[in-house]
Image 1 (cartoon, one colour):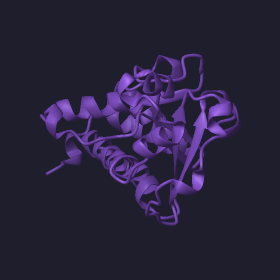
Image 2: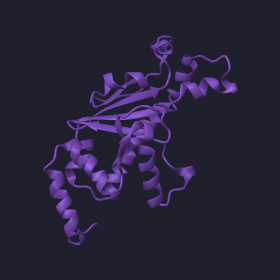
Image 3: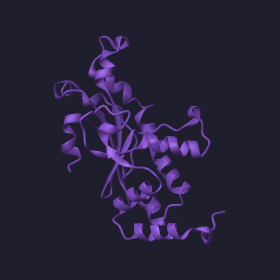
Length: 210
């Protein structure tokens, strides 16, 4: 059982500091306190946007670190989105896949960008990753004994507004060939949006202005 009498002075100081911040800043700073860093998208190992300076959290790293601490092996790890961004109450979950790599693979010869999108946005892919990412976020908060208002941000229906983005290095011309009406439909709540915005690297500024 968790005993508050065992909380260090440093932890109490950090909690008070977090309570005095805007929720997005508090959430990010809580993760920073425990060793997770915000970095430019181009530096994320799985990135498909080699020139992007958009600041994100590498969620694969967060997942791998928590899994290691809990003794969960690779075969039993949850799946997750690749990166997360938090601005105000908007929590963005980002999945990244390279169309360049997909189309250059001989096994995908003759396949179109529509095939690429339909494969990675299949009902067994993005929807399950969205759920697992939120479970992992709650797991991180619980493992590091986060202050209550950070849990409230995720669990209160007036808290985080959660949206998902599929990011690819396809060109603008290639993107116009997509038939968006054929994309799979996912379940949503008032806060977790079903729609997945498909964007390419050159369009990041429109969705995530500085």
